[in-house]
Image 1 (cartoon, rainbow, N blue to C red):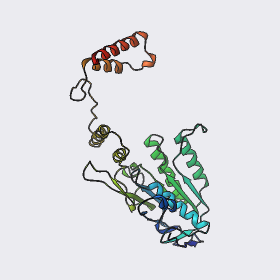
Image 2 (tube, rainbow, N blue to C red):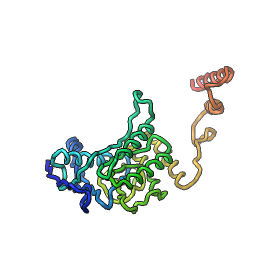
Image 3 (cartoon, rainbow, N blue to C red):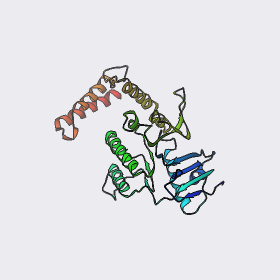
Image 4 (cartoon, rainbow, N blue to C red):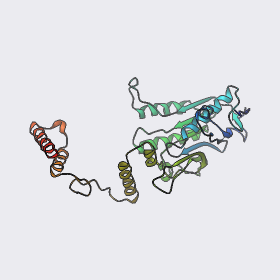
Length: 301
């Protein structure tokens, strides 16, 4: 399988400290894919020891993050590594903050679980630790997630441990909360080929390159997931209006060009939407709704 013997670095005081892996591969992922695995380099040294990886959902960010953790672990238990060459510094711990899964056994939301993990991580790390953070902050408002993640990355930077962080929060860079040229931080992206025609799908290349991703490609992800074309079209309209600053025009119930509805259907929908909360409605209002439904059924028949 073309594994090679890594070089183990015993000191963190020289210029080669950290992790230098050429054409690394995830050993388990490589076993289960049909096509050739796309290798990627890892360079976390004395000058750049935090790598922030951006890119769409399906581009391979999480696989790359786990790959680095697996290779560092394998080196520490005496294994050869799936790569061309590697220099691995002695590491006291690998702390992985992966996406939380909600469970009834734990009385916490997904974001609370994320925060608990992050708090533990920040208390335990040392300059000789490897930190892996995958999609922190997805379970809350973007502003809160961005704020906590940015502050945590600055704290990790001050401790000077090695870290890889994947994120969809491109606002970190567009709002200049972190500069992609900042000292000690390397910003990378998983490359995706976007087609010229809307009829074609985006093609993930699974290759890590320098720079910040342009978008999270959510619409392309929705197409790959089989979301209805009408929903995709509406989502594209919303995105274009948000980018241009134009107010989003709602679907008009009184316009035959938007919805082909008979008069009784429009009356029924309007009546239903006019009431703020049907859970607190009166018997009279419920009776009126039932009557309008009955009229609608008669019109259809």
